[in-house]
Image (cartoon, rainbow, N blue to C red):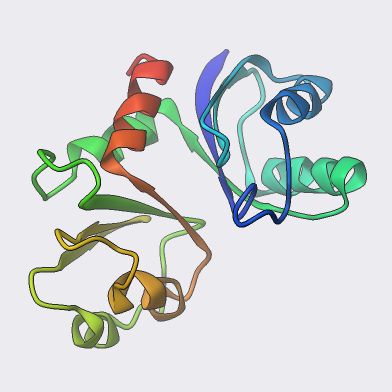
Length: 176
């Protein structure tokens, strides 16, 4: 059995794509995943599986949710080792858990536009792209950050972001 984290994008936000965590846990259990644990209502799940988590597995889970709930969320799986590696490669300070964000990418971008990302950066913001993780340090928050809002388009691949506080909690849940 291998440990994984599933990061969902756009569920339970603004009253849209409502997916109670107990329902998500049941859907995942029906697909054969084990030791399923959720963290907050925005789609953070740790679990175990014998099968490797591939793009096909992500699609299968998204379709299972569509069949039960009527919408198809984007989900990104990370193996525990890959998640730990993303944490270890973090280039920014972790003192302010809400200033540091990890944007987990569905794949390593092949056509990222670093010039566009740099142009969107506000004073005080810093970023670094390492493989399939885009790190954003935004000490003034990401609510009004043009860089946070435009990162996905400039990177050219689907992303889902988590702040350091959430990443740290998921690390504990994974036991890495």
